[in-house]
Image (tube, rainbow over all chains, first blue to last red; front, side, top):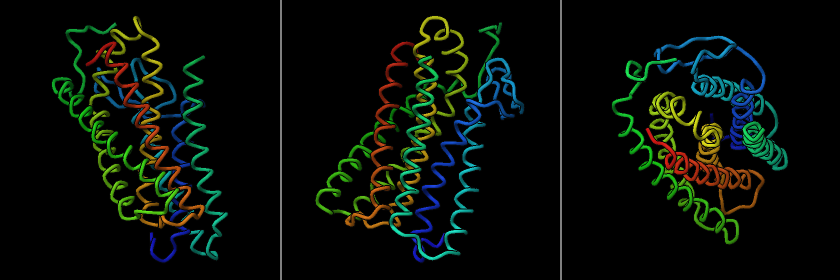
Length: 115
Length: 161
């Protein structure tokens, strides 16, 4: 990431990565998909859509979200560098998207626990 | 049903030490991110202290990462010995609070890393959209950390590892 040359691209990639991380962290919690589970008593890892007894998906969801965030950051960075410098408004939109994604995910988890 | 005497979770023997270090890390983190939040608000008003903003971004990112890893290592012991064997039955509200806390911690880590990266890209003395985005990440990290500290204390008051 050549931050010195194209800080607008790096900033957009960072904000996009945050939004992607938040979305990918929450997605498996609300929509069934195969996930990496850790079983604390058996000390075993398993991969699948159904939660094993006492299974913990937090490690798997964080790993999945981090991978998605890295991929999104790399994609946005490459695409943004191929285009003309982003306007301050465009960078602001990426920033707004990141903040809104973070707020939405926290709110979704809070509402899910309140139900 | 698991046999409490037979079951042993990862890092169980050092869980109390891990949680203690997690708490010490949280103290450093809440101090650094609160100072960073205050600096950020001052910068928004007066346009000062770019280097200080970058320094606090660095300290907050390191202390957040260390605290996060220590919490992750102690998590299996909490999951079995605290949650499954006590909180699920006696304090379901604490279980729900922890579920929110663990996800806020992940989101906060993303915001914290984002604040660290954007502190290297932007001049906080200027009022550009990217700078406003950086400030939002800093203040979001601060809010997340305070929520985590208060909810962590509340849960530990009910039952610790």
